Image (cartoon, rainbow, N blue to C red):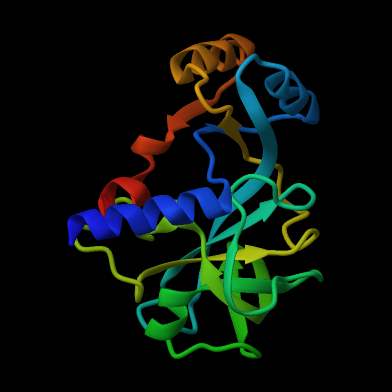
Length: 206
């Protein structure tokens, strides 16, 4: 059973071109270009990842919203039903979270962050493999009733700065060398660098 789960997860990681490294912090477009130029880096893309509250749902769950800069080339959403969001305030909601809360395509998801309120139309259901297990990191037994995620179209989170750069490395490239080069580029900035095996949602699933 464990081996079958591992094979399925790795298939999803490949299908989504999931990142090998995440650099978290407020990073410029110049930083993306510099990281793309590192020997061994296949691709790099800025993203927004921000946590909102779904106060109208049972248990008032946390929902992480994800938005890539441009068309997703790293950590692509894996659509299972419906369509991918193509307009502002549309989303692809995580399948397990949707089922747990009885949400489906066409429903509206109302989310808050402080005074900011978003009303997102659910146009698709799917998966983001980096959130195989969605959790805030403080739960012994993560539940889709309490934590979820959604992928949103360009412009939806335009009021927030890009907070991540996701990088994939070329086959056979030295991950430690790539990480060292990234650290050298960002030594004067407040960033956190995370490898795939250290991503909480992945660790919990494996």
